[in-house]
Amino acid sequence: MLQTMNFERLHPHSWLWQGVGHCSGHFGELLQGRFSDGQGGSFRGLVTLSCRSVGSTARAIIVPGDGDIEAPRGLSKVARAAQTYRNLHHVPRDQDFRIDIISSIPSGIGMGSSTADIVATVRALDQACGHLTGIDDLVALVLSVEEACDSTMLDHNVRLFAQRDGKVREEFGVRLPPFYVLGVNMMPGEVFVTDDMPPAEYSAAEIGHFDELLQRLRLAVRDGDVRSLAAIATESAMINERKYPKSNIEHLLVLRKTLSASGICISHSGTIAGLIFPLDALPLQSSLNEASSEITSWGSRYLGLYRI
Image (cartoon, rainbow, N blue to C red; front, side, top):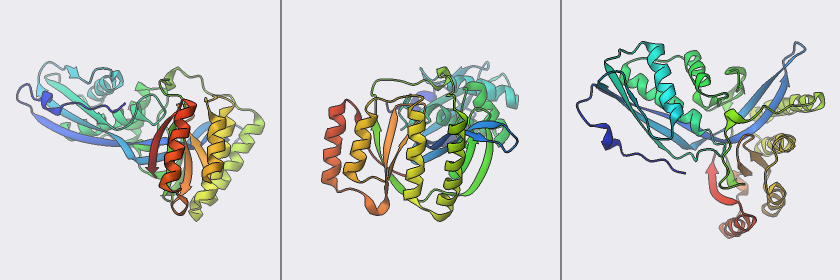
């Protein structure tokens, strides 16, 4: 659901400073699982499918007061993040925070809405308070508010990120090549709360498969090969489908063949999925219209095209 707030309500009396911050969302993951660490152990990690088409923008206003924090109703993580920020930077208690959020990221379906809200809030407070929250402090702040976070708080380069530890495990140093994702909310009305979900358990064979996919991902990113990226995303999605099944996945796989999509991607802790298309292989509008009707007939929701 699109969250919109009226910024005018943030001016009940004279304000001291104000700031604006933004953070993008994502469209699930290209790869998520458990990977060998080279020392006989393993770690959980993911490669996020960053999507600049959606995001959260926060506006923070500092006013004289008693140290109160006002955040949008229903966004408790924003208020908790603001309190943590106050403690981190020792913001004087005679200053109140007034925070508002405008977000184009639907919440609870796996597009990184909560991380984006928190990071946008921190960036807005940085500008308003005159601070600069470093990356390590930012990651620690986010993880103090939620169990796992997304690497979209960093930048849009490809990286293997340990979402529950807040550590970058591998930097690829480049962005993904451009492509389109046809988005589907597989289970409209259902909300996934990542913090409430137990981490998936993977077998030794599955960890070996993820290691292989990671090696293939390195080559695909280096070559800018969208079709190989889509194949990797599909294999990752199908492994994780065994852990957290989604309704109508079999219909999505059939639609993939019908539209000649290069692969599928999913949010491993949400309800969204997508079909991946290189820029030169996008279906005709008439085919997309038919796909929208078919998706609706499953009980899912067509979300449209997203440029990655």
